[in-house]
Image 1 (tube, rainbow, N blue to C red):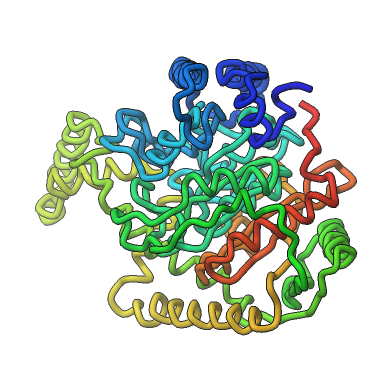
Image 2 (cartoon, rainbow, N blue to C red):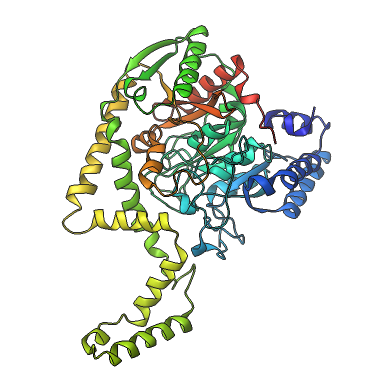
Length: 512
């Protein structure tokens, strides 16, 4: 069997037994990247030299009988939004195109301590703002199942890398579905943990009360391995949950007895693709065959989730991205060209006799800020900054942002009530399979509705996972989403593993 067909768990076993080396494993994935990433575009940068050096170090320690970390020798791809000391962290934006991080994010430090082989940095929607990875300022990522279609976003590069077997494991971030949505559209497993389970220290912030780091993998078992390595309390993150990390990978095979699944009434209605609905309902029947009970539940405020999210997230983005002014770090405009432009405007106004307008010309500093941000940010980032700044402005704060916070509380209350009757909530990850590249790029509202089933978990702060549950007639993956009460990642992973033990959807490979 090819190295690329082995799970991360199996790779660890084979390396521990001496039947494979970390260098052999790493080289196999580097070769796969070399063969296919020109077409897929999952990676922004591949660190072949650093990956082989790390793999060699792991092999040497294994041979010498010295300790090796829990991910010793397993390649991991990382979304290019987490700081790694001395390395570029671009967020797929011109603003940070040349920025090198001065420290390691906690997740990166944990991966290094676990002896993971950090094989490369994956593409994303700029600053994680988008659901298709089309908003990247640096390149286009394509869905490995159909290269004319989007991989989802914003962690589209990470999901595509795992789907195309260019990495066995990957790190993504999820602010409104940015792990689960691309996982569903690319036919892999992707998990958004409960808010605070994984440290956000060193994560370039989009929306601080919503962002969460999580794993992407081919299976729940491998996702459990990766989550185990990156989860845990961090004093550097004030929102980090101070709780021990359960042994997810050890417990994952334990059956869930008396499991009750909830189907959300509001998730099965107009707008849901017929093939997606059939696959999801069939997945629920699989759970029933395994002994689970199914109950209908209601999340009455779910119809407000997208509107609520697209007030709160842009407001937080507007605040977080204010720091990119061209003065401290990030893209800075060509000041000679800027001053030449200002002088040309001044001469034009003076020649026209508009002396009052001359006096109102921007100062050089204000002009530098404006030009640097205008040149550095893409259209979607600008759109969200403007939405957020407007909603936070005097006279509108109470009408928009404060009201959205109140609705957010009601959304969380709906989940709390539903979880009184069920253990997990099951439903579609997305309303439709992956769409064509360019199909929605000029229609922001249609793009925002892609997040219909995923944003609620971020607003409520709960965990969710997407697992493959079928394919359309055109061969496109369909995702099943499971959601759990806070800090029930173990239950999510075991339920996902339970399904994957009974089906083979997660073992399918794209026809690259």
